[in-house]
Length: 362
Image (tube, rainbow, N blue to C red):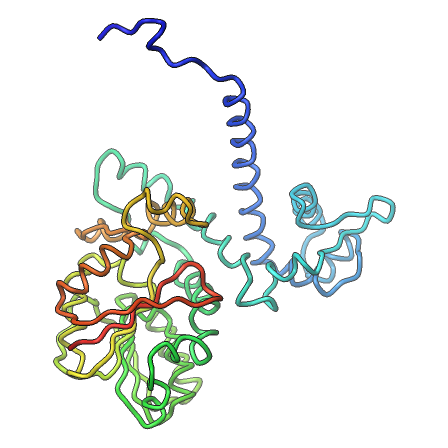
């Protein structure tokens, strides 16, 4: 069809100008996210939160850092409206309202932890671009600091909330753990959740599986330090679960959508549960359809994490590549296909990004 002037969409200059402004905001926000990560990793936010208005030299000295770098970082934070600046005193300060979301003391609300994903994912940009042309994926081994960042992130969303809000989602679970049950955490990472549970419930027996040797080594070192006799960790591919009716409770925390073969993993979990067992699955709160995520508060971030990590690591292992935003619809279908009979989805006030699936075997 030949286009006529009438069929060509007219150019809306106001819309173009608004989009240009939006793009500038994107660029600034991306830069600020990188600098927030640096502020977190260097402890600068924590240092600022303890100081009265101070010069860059005073802040650098308190943080044990080189002043010239601190001064440039502070300039980014001031122009990004994260840090206040008094030009008369040449002094910087972190408003308490901002410290409430940027310091380690603010956990579980420390968003600076999440900002670390931006530079982390940027390290594999070239490898992911190659996949756009060649297919395949980028393996876990390509990601530096991934388990460290994930452990810190889950420490806020999962570990800190385990006893007070997550366990009570399952009626009677706390009492059962106090009496003594067998618990498995699949994809346990460095095992922080199990360490907390093993200390709190000495009558129960806890096992953690993860295919990362580095993560399991860190978990085992923690067990030795803590002297926990009711907790063990093992390097194991989640798709190789071979136990039958061994556990009263199986947990996965933000782990299923990363799997190469999540269908196989879910069937293995179903098989490993005892007949009256419970499967507790925490995973990303989303729809399986992009149109269902238009109002999701973190959709762009989560789709980006998916493309640059969750989807690609699955594809690298010849997997399904579900991605971070596999969503409730797909999750429910896969749980049904794995043989689970009853599923409830619950949510927590402090956690706007995750759903908690309470799944009964029979």
